[in-house]
Structure formats: structure tokens, C-alpha cells
Length: 69
Picture 1 (cartoon, one colour):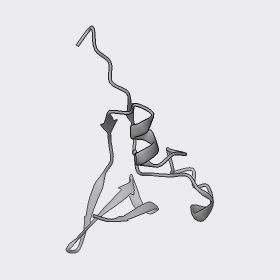
Picture 2 (tube, one colour; picture 1 turned 180 degrees about the horizontal axis):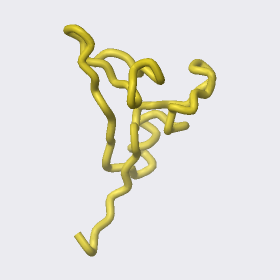
Picture 3 (cartoon, helix red, strand yellow; picture 1 turned 45 degrees about the vertical axis):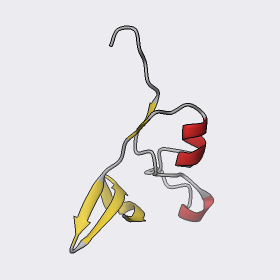
Picture 4 (cartoon, one colour; picture 1 turned 90 degrees about the vertical axis):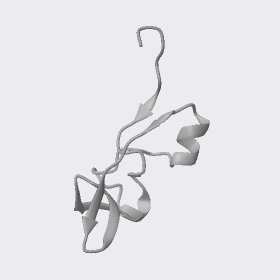
């Protein structure tokens, strides 16, 4: 690993946008498609099970809910 580096993004899908009031829980200003085009090769996120549904959220779905997967 000492000769290779991979660019990654923390909570890759958690966008900070006008539609969510530029939530401080949003880590990214660019969506995943733009991130991949810019060379990001590691995407990270968290899935939470709520009932029979799995949702992409940032630490808690009360903070920022990215939707169902």
C-alpha cells in the first residue's frame, strides 16, 4: 500500500444542497457521478434498517436522510 493511493469520500451520498437547507450533516457538494468523474474510487456511507426498509443516512436518519435503497 505504500505506493498506491485512492481518493475516497466520507458519506459520499450526503449532499449539502439548497433542497436540504445546506444541512451541516451533508459532507459533499457534488453527487456521486461527479465524484467518480473527478477520480474518486472509494465511496463510503451508512445504511440504517428502519422496519423492513434500509435507508442511507448520515449518523442518524433524523440528521440527514438520503432515502431508501
